[in-house]
Amino acid sequence: MSGPGQLARRLGLRDAVVIGVGSMVGAGVFAAFGPAARAAGGWLLLGLVIAAVIAYANAVASAQLAAAYPTSGGTYVYGRERLGAWWGFTGGWGFVVGKTASCAAMALTFAAYAVPGPAWLQRGVAVLVVLALAGLNLRGITRTAVVTRVLVTITLLCLAVLVIGLWVGNGAGFSRIVQDSGIDPGGPLGVLQAAGLLFFAFAGYARIATMGEEVVEPRVTIPRAITLALGIAVVVYAVVGVSALAAAGPATLADSSAPLVDAVRAVGAGGLDPVVRIGAAVASLGALLALIAGIGRTGLAMARGRDLPGWLAAVHPVHHVPHHAEIALAGVISLLVLITDLRGVIGFSSFGVLIYYAIANASAFTQPAKDRRWPRALNLLGVAGCLVLVVTLPGSSVLAGIAMFAVGLAGRAVVLWRRSTRAQP
Image (cartoon, rainbow, N blue to C red; front, side, top):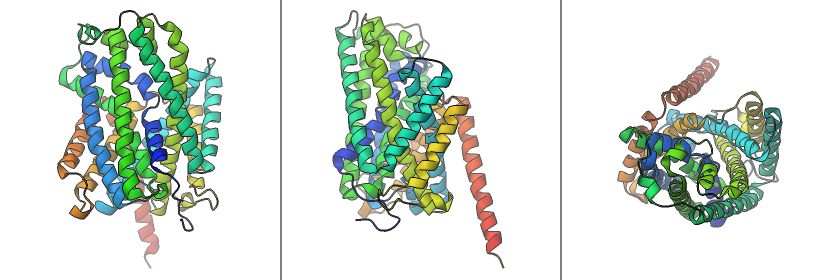
């Protein structure tokens, strides 16, 4: 049951897992292997392993915290409760701003795959998609879960057809993974850069935690859903990554802006191009749908904590969704889609997400023994891993991320100062 201003608990284990998988197996699986191969060459699989290990540490920290604090907001709430209001705000701000930019990027990615035509037409379609998915979210979380289930199923079917096509084509083999590709992968730094880029694709399990107020039996369901969703995503990325490398080799992937398209062409399976395009378009929709839902819940929590305007804390009396937050979010994303192209935002968003999870791990480290499910060593690994990946991101991404947090923290300081001055007699 839910009271006034509260969200309703309607998500079971299956729905929570599907939303998590839909967030992780998005457009990234169709694009991330290109920049990862440029950074690490054939060693990108090691980068994938590192990303998966750090993601696991972050996932169990999020699961442990969500079980103790089963409410909307994710790390914004955990940071406030365990470390203090400023830490919570930092995590929430990085998530909302970084992922809002990712939403615009996902909408444009969908349009690029689905609508061959001029840029103005693609932008128009991207805006329509954002408004349609926001409208769907406004109908209730169960509608979101049903549509996500359909989109995830189509995406996984497309990936299965793609993988089979790569292996039955001409020339695919494990020897291509280790052959001399002519790429200078940049040594350990290149591997870590690849891990940072691939980690971005695994970060979707946060969506389950941000919806903690809507999950049935959250103390049991959320930890199971997060670990199951991450496990499925790691398997999918590993199978697709190995198959693409075996088909095309690291050199071809490194030079490609559409690595899976070039992989099927490398083995003479160009007829699968439409499958890749459909899969990428549908995966973009699934990730965008889950992102809008997750950002809306974090915005709701930040409004409740007076870190965003209070009217964003409204909950629809019938559909039990943060309708003001999601309407405002749809407007911002639509504006970004119309005025800029954020498809290169992966590094900027990765910076925000890595800081978000570093705060989550630090918060989990402080939990008492009665709330602990995993050893503190995993929290230390998570913090260290996130910070290492942050400093290995491209310099422009680091500078943009620092600027993003500086603006948010300075803005909060000004707001608090104005509140204190108004409160004085």
